[in-house]
Structure formats: structure tokens, C-alpha cells
Length: 403
Image 1 (cartoon, rainbow, N blue to C red):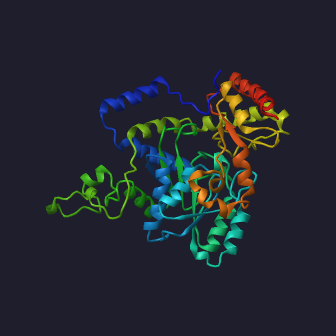
Image 2 (cartoon, rainbow, N blue to C red):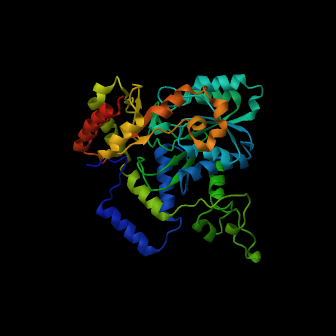
Image 3 (cartoon, one colour):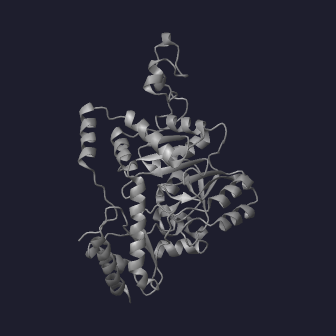
């Protein structure tokens, strides 16, 4: 038996939609992209949504938009406070857009600790060097947004939510991604809405939305729809006598981060099911928690909440006698797929080893979770038989990995 981390199953009707798209030969951004952007903005609770070819591209464009914004004027080289316990794309996006990451430790729910952020800001002789606060709603668990927003307001920081893994998670009744100036989402495999590779920036700020649209198209001046250009309602139309198409004028330096209609269409099929997807994943987490409760002295089980949209089923080894590598090897040999929890970036990631000396011993919880955490699947396609099998094999793996 194979218990996978994620899966994707399409109905025959959904497959027919893809065949019709192939027949149309209209693969670049078009009607499905606009439909996806509208539906995802509405679902999250923001006015706007801009799509990208990946979540990483979306985050990079988000930082570039802040740097090009007349309103926010985030400076290159300024510091971004974020969590060390996250997928590496978060930190890569900060650095590749010319910003400097500064790490604050996490709490027991894997999220950045507001008290540690406050210490960083209070210790700084010049708080103007900080420009952005970047919380990550890791694995669907939600950061303490009220405290973070209040702190950002006090110190003049822009709050940028990394909601890549938290489709539909809620904070005090509001969906994540709508709780800040802008947010990014990823639609990679195993996410509640999956499009293979896809990403968005969500915001209610029109300037940022327009900048993101421009940036993903190599900084082009015109972000209007085909209809706007055809009806000459595009505000950027160059004099007709010049014969120049404004799509080929670039007002800022950008990227080619555009996605395809295939990704948009696949995402739309999943948005239609998202509420049921989240409910089923929550039920699977509850079931796994009940089945693994007898091992709670050895493993930290995930917190259960109806406010959390679970990306996966995270576990942390509490018993020091259990070897994570051996445990995961046993799971793999038995057909239960797992992954190590994202390491503490400056301590565990080779790409950021130059930061290790600076942060050694200063991020104890992130280090602990990064070295002892791992996760298995809880996706909506798992059967009760597969869940029972995962529980059984987990018990065997614990025994196998104990010294």
C-alpha cells in the first residue's frame, strides 16, 4: 500500500475541459486566468489577485512591487523580519530581490513569535533599517496577525503574508491572505488548491496589483485586457501615428513570470471543491490524532482546529532516543511517504551556512523543529484503510527507530 503526501484526481468532465483548451490552442494567459484571479480574490477576501507561474515568482514580484511603489517605497537593502522555519523559497525571494532577511524564533505552533520580533525591533538602534514583516502561515497554521499588524503599525513596517501553504485557513473568522497589505499563495502539489505550479499575489491595493501585473510581463507599461486595448480604453495607448503597441514598452524592470491557461483551468477545478477538501483534510487530521494518541509521549501531534486548512500532518519527535532518519526510512520502506520539516534556514540550509555563526543558539525552537520534525499526508483522497495503515506503520517505525 502507498500512502502519498498528496494526490490529484480529475473527473471525466474536468478532463474534457482540458481537451477543449488543447483544441483551442489558446494557451497563454486569457479567459481562464481572469476567471481564476476573480474567484481567488473573492475567496480570500481581497479586491485583487495577480497570477504567476509559481508561488516563488509571486513572492519575488510582491517585493519588487513594494520597491517600485510610490506609496510604500520599500528600499532595496532594507531588512525583512521573517521566520527561519519555512520552505527555502521564502528566504530566497527576500534575497533575490535585494532585501536582507532577519530571523525571529518560532512558537510551539511553528509560527513566528511576536515577542521575539519585538525584541529585535527594540534592540535596533535604527528601526528604519527594517521595512517589511513577513510572517509565514506554515503548513496552514496561522500566525498571530493582530499582534503582528499592531507591531508593524508602530514601527512603520509593511506586512506581507506568506500564505503559500494556508489556502482557506482562518484567523478570527477572516481568511489568511486578507489580513495584510499583500500576500502570496502557492498552488503546488499537495496544496488544497493544486495547479501543479502556480502562484498569486493577493491585495486590496490597486497600485500593487498593477505593479505585479506589469512586473510579471517584463515590466511592460500596459496591463490592460485585450478588450480594453481593442476599444482604445487603455490609458497607456501611445499615439496611433507612432504605430507602437504599449505592451512592448517597459516602464520598470521586470521578469517573465506569466503562467498559462492550463494552470488557471486546473486551479479553477480545485477552487470549486476547496471547502470539501479542507473539511476532509481536517477530518483526516482528527482521525490520525486519535489513532496516534498512544504515541503522544514520543511524538508531538498536530494541533487540531477547524480554523486550519492543513497542508499535511506534521509530527515532531519528542523522545531523543528516536532517530528521525531511521524512522523515515521505515515509513518509506512500508509505503508511507514522508518529508522532513523545513529546517531552520541559517542553521540547517547549506545555501545559508554563512549565517550560521550569527544565529547559532539564538533560534532554539526553530532548530528543534527543523531537526526533529517531519510530516506525512492528510490529503482529501486518503481512504480509511490508508489512514489505518499509516497509523499501524508509524507504530512500527517508532520501534524500529528507537535506540
